Image (cartoon, helix red, strand yellow):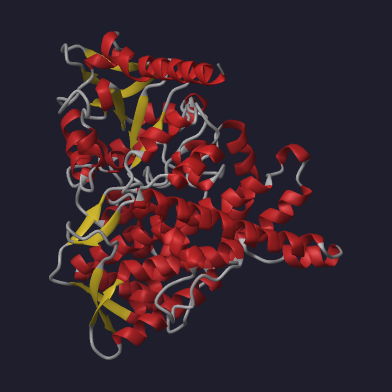
Length: 542
């Protein structure tokens, strides 16, 4: 009898989900039906194959050019996906009505399950509570104290690369080195933990797990689709137990990575908490004086009001989230910057000259002086504009919503639409990258890498558009209450690493093609057949 009831409940949930997420889209008319849209490739797959492949960035770019700032794509079994990069619509989704547009409606999802309830995956009041406690440790005042440490690690990187380059130019995997230096900076700045001495060929098991998270995750495209459904039927811990037992090599590898990150995070946090709690107030103050983010966060958590405190599970999730969110994004942005500088040797020379003059023979600069280098700042802004490491952002409205538009669009029936009615539960993709290269605001050269644009007055249309990004009219770090909390940290990291590298080396392309692959974070490979994340450049010591 018990088994029969469970089976009936499962079938009822399956029937409800099938109607809610698939059949209703097919049978009932939708206000999205009149929006511009490409043809569906098939009833079962829709446009999913186009938007999930390794080269899907090409499709997303062409879709934005062809169908404009508000359009529709076809998902599985006829579901509709709303694609948005209109500035006023973005303002509504990310700022004005942000509470109505969470990342998910399901009890949990893939990243929440693999990383835990950290700042990247939490929602609503939990996210606000975490953000409130974390904001002070990402302030510019705190970053000033980290600058010397960033330089120290970058010079160690420089020495390690120099040992391999010696007196002649050598082909070097700069993506691998950028991953290692960003991981080490994040480890020391975030947790007082060293992953890498740059002498051996790899980091420890924790570091290796972090480096492999997104490459392995991107090869499991069904995981983000299936897991949210499963969370309606079972708690996260039970689903994780099931996933560990499934005979799929990639899935087992993913679970091993997740488990390693969780285990090591718990161990490191437990060590820090023990230091804070075993001694008198003097010991507490000494540990709190450490500049790493977790030490400061733990001390703040101890004195926070009960309702503001983070649980041990949340603290562990913050550690995994901070390292993971900060590593691939920044390391691949650095990799891309080195590539475009190799493609534009005159820009590389100009940037090197500015850096050398500013350092004036010294090994490092202070925070404020480094932030004032105009061409270095322009190169980084332009690279992040044209090549946002995270190109797409998911949202789901909790109730019917109306999105206002900056400019009217023409529907399929020929009528002009000045707003779009979005039904509750609609899958929304915020196209961050398309906003960064929207020719209506950035001009006809929007797809050209031209750092000089940041040294000139920006287009008037761009200034008036009020794009809701947190950084320089760009959506690369998003906007609103869920904007990247570490964007100043990432900027400083990029400026220090680039300064040290460009004073010591020159960079040139090799004969091999560099391919950039779509994923949760875009990543390079040498050619389209290669699955290994890497980018080879010819490096010469100066």
